Amino acid sequence: MNTSSPSQVWKWLSQHIYGLYLTIALAGIAYLLRNLPIFALFSPLIIAIILGILFRNIIGMPNYCQVGVTFSMKRILRFAIVLLGMQLSLIQVLTIGSKGVFLIILTLFGTFCFTYWLGRKLGVSKSLTCLIASGTSICGASAVVATSSATHSSDRDTTYAVAIVTIFGTLSMILYPLLQTLINLPPKTFGIWCGVSIHEVAQVLAAAYQVSPISGELASITKLSRVLWLAPVILGINYLYSQHKQNYNHLSPTTIAIPWFIFYFILLIILNSLNIFPTEFKSAIEIVNKFLLTISMAAMGLETKLHQLRETGLKPLYLGAGSWLFISIVSYGLVKMFY
Image 1 (tube, rainbow, N blue to C red):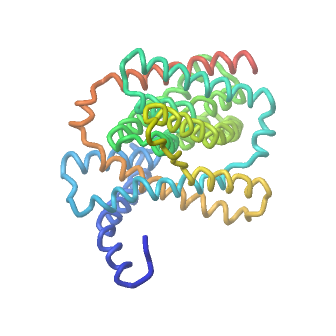
Image 2 (image 1 turned 120 degrees about the vertical axis):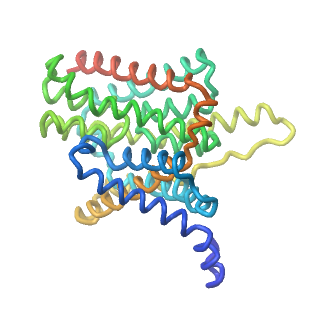
């Protein structure tokens, strides 16, 4: 946005304000609904994307909201991903030890490779497969959007992938605490299992803290250590996609499109590792960041056209299910083996 004159500022606001109002309103409603007992198990992020989908496909979204909704889905979400770095530190990796690091790496890259292989077998597009693979193996919707920047995926693929990882992450959040009583996992082991396999940070905490505070703490540390891999994985995908594009365009080589927000994300992780941010400041940023993510999820829902999802077919849904089962079962076996 060029802010060199008041008229340009006003023009920008007039183009974006209605879509921003809509996404902020849906995010606010999601927070209010979260306080009702019937929605207690769901995070505001999940409620917001459902509200957005219902609004778009039942009421309909006015055209003058489109620019602001797109801004919320792309710019605000990338900013929220950057702020997520303030919740992470390299010290967390040391906390879980070498066994924990090895478990995260094995599960993450194993899930990504399996999902990529299964996507090819099912005939799902390479772009959508990468989005589902990163969302399942790393950190849900945030990873999907970060990956979409590297792969230049369409909005339809991005929203479909977000919907898929949200569905199966929510299933994990509900089923894991029930399974804990059946398979009799100790709180420590259960927390690590949640952290290494459930999609979203909020879903991990919701599932783990239902069992015990110990489970919740270990799940949080394990999950955030897993989120640290967002940067190297996205940069790797970005490089591979750029190389692939160059191979098919010899006459005019493609410049690598660098997802700069990932570097800002890394910078915040490094700064946070130096303990330069006060605890109160980080707590406030975490609250703001969660609301920004909720706004972005509302925008994701508003961009979801159910008829387009039907046109894409059920194969991506099968892929998401297979990827979810793989990470849940394999990580359980590895956790039992290591712990």
